[in-house]
Length: 88
Length: 114
Length: 315
Length: 97
Image 1: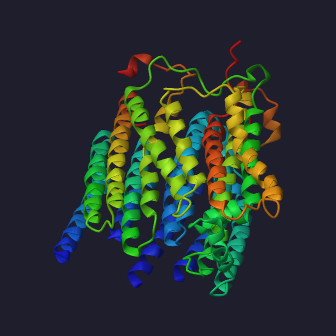
Image 2: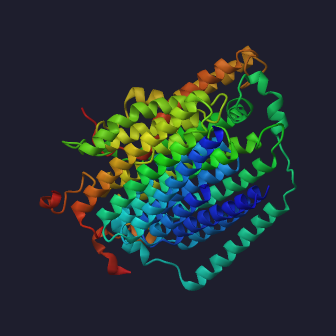
């Protein structure tokens, strides 16, 4: 079961590799994060390692960080927007 | 035990890969990433030491694990300092390159000069 | 067992493929996103090695602060990329480098394959004195009790790194705050996330810290999660990075190593020597020291990400 | 009873994996960034949700079960926020970003 999710994640990575734009790469990373959490939980259930829930919990907390960092750094506040009218 | 050996082998491969990136990639930020790859490869080799040292009821030897944890934190501090240096260099010269001759030229000199 | 082995091999190939992407990707941004994904896969590998503490550290630092640091840097350096791309070394140098790296890999792989099984271990020694520390997690015991000097010096390294980053500030900004001024209106979606996440994150961070005495976890991991929470508040522009001259900030930065060192020296008086704990009081003391380290880590990591001061200090 | 629980667990996990696969297929095949985003969020919510549901039957303690649910809730929050942010970035800069 964990294998299938890992496989899914692997195919997702091919998306990371071939994504036409940064946004697609980010989406793949997002999906990889969720898939990684699922794989982690399944691996933990299969092997019975203690404390893996906390690892998954940490990952879940930080799942939005890459996207957030991308959005906040893509348009830094100190450089003026090239065409502000485009905002909406 | 095969899992541990496998992890050790990836560690070895990662060190090689990171070294290659460190030598051939001209951008400082990419060099930083490559250096971090070398670091994580070394950590994985520590990981196999830990796993092979499983004893006394622990699934892995805690001493290498603790050293890896310390290593991860220190590696982050080092990368943060490196990134800050690169960003400052970029602010100052408009470039992010390690070639000293490029630093003296003003940023307006343009991309086509070399 | 064979299914599991196949899985492990798949995971190994995946880690290697993503690492290769990080090195060979065209743009710096691509490489950075690949690197973040790589950190995630690495924490699964650590779980498979039964090193849950390491997995927790890897994902708390790799998924949070490292991602923010590198993505931010890649976005700023975008304009410089085309220039740097012209400096790619020649083909012969690449071949030479590749040969060198293959050699290094081969030697390391040989070492890995030749390791005795079971290998040398310090686990019995770690287990022997575990009861005296009152801790249940041997990794925490190694970090805070057996190899306390390492851990204390590591905190010093963190503080030195902050000093190094701050010293890159131009003279006129010294004493000011890192980062840009707060935007007039924070992005609403982001602001919502930054309002909901930190209370939960602080809870999880403290839980991880507290559980670290007996289960996987500890001050590093908890501190990194707390650091990430402060960082998201700054990213959402709900709060600003404090000016680097602020007294409370400086106190928080040195609190961890200072308290640690004080108790280490006190070990001469209270117990048998430098960094030894009086018997019976080891666990409360360790948790007390760890609490200050938690504070230092939670403050240091975001300051490292925020970078040198970029605004003039307020008069 | 435990057999029924096991079957439920396996079915739920299988369904979760199905949604992950569906999400990936969507990410690969849909024509533009916004529809791909749509596929991504479905995989996030349902895939992980079903996996967590399947594992809940095996959770040893109440705290363990609560942690699993918290993980799912946090990923929901992160997924929804990231989708909003990415969607806005796509709209601002056009699909070619």
